[in-house]
Length: 175
Image (cartoon, rainbow, N blue to C red; front, side, top):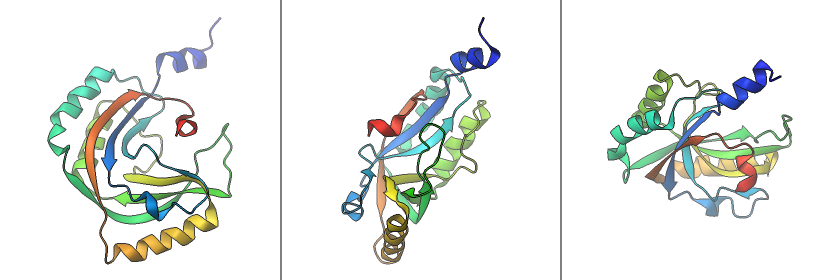
């Protein structure tokens, strides 16, 4: 007999929506140990327990196609926890992220919420990850350097393509 938890997991594959970007300055993290982001993107929604049909999400994204080809400006830098492996977090590892503040990105996120999704990492913080699984103290040092350089050298990321799929477990391992 199938448990409710198993039934729920099988029938609610989760929704993942993102927009690919070009211009991610990976040269800033080239010397660091870790996994540079080979698939640059901004996550618009990561909803672990939703089952919104992909065609409904496509309806929202088609209404926003006009932003593809435009750019967003990086407004800050931060260090996030690394993606937990097997449900446990390694407190020695982190990710360097470039923060994005853009009304269009926020509006898409809000529309996805209105369709019944619930972002699994609250609060939503639009960002593009530079590197995953980097030694935490090194992440913090480089993040401070990037923060200083942003004062005189803006970083623009070009929005190129929407992605809409069910959640793929262990996606970071595939980078």
